[in-house]
Image (tube, rainbow, N blue to C red):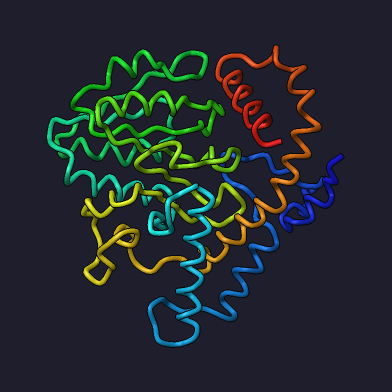
Length: 323
């Protein structure tokens, strides 16, 4: 059995009690995760020992450079990326998406189309809505009553003028797992770019961007035990074809050219720590949980319908491939 007290002891915030002395239970997964002590300590230690901007010729600056390189390498491994040069960093997923949409607005032609979905949360809709001011047509894929996307609607709407498809891998609100492999096959036929929003997917399922064959993938560390830090994967060479808004002092090549201003270095060091925590601690618990819950889930299969049935199938596939 899982030692829940041991699990909770990693998270100081879970020791809080309400006015009636009831211990706090945190359930707002879509709003982010709580932060373990190892991440909190890493932030504190950075400010004590390494606080500096990058590219300086002194010890704390060089240490920060090393931290940033190590963090990019760790995220690249986490996402199955080709190299750390594919990983860009931002204040959060939303600001990175806005920067990316601005860069793409300069190469997508007037009259071309961008597809989004009714299932996506606003952080993967709002940035693409801004393209309408450049004469780019925004097209939405409908949501069915069972909480899944209407893939026939998607097939009817994609065409030779579709420059980009932006869709979530998993819904924040419903837990629906989209059929992104099917979407990729269709986008490939029309030579359309594919951006995948993995914010709600990355904490729960393994990701390999090379296998996904996506052009961009975006996620945020606050969904897997870190602070608010946005992470962007770009296919090798693709970001260098864009001209995102940036300062002239910013490095003018990938992955840095889309990063605006001084980054949250203390937050970035924790991305390495919280990924280590997820891989070394939480995933161990996941295997235990899966083994203990597999029979329960199988016995409950009759209760999974619509979008929840889709989620059930994805969970079972992950169980069968990781245990």
